[in-house]
Length: 67
Image (cartoon, rainbow, N blue to C red; front, side, top):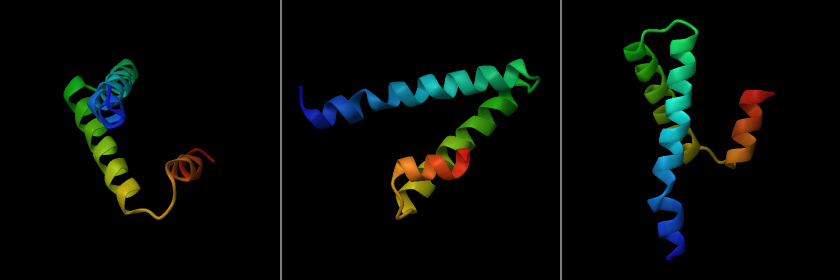
């Protein structure tokens, strides 16, 4: 299996798994599902754009948000 295929080909499944969990958590705390989906998709999109434009590595970005 090509290394790029291993990362990029299966990668969206991991992103969708995370998104699904985030949506379910938002619904669990009271958001309507459509609002939860919008919040999660916007968060993922914004995070990806920020990561692409940042000079910091992903671990640093994560630490900045979780510290």
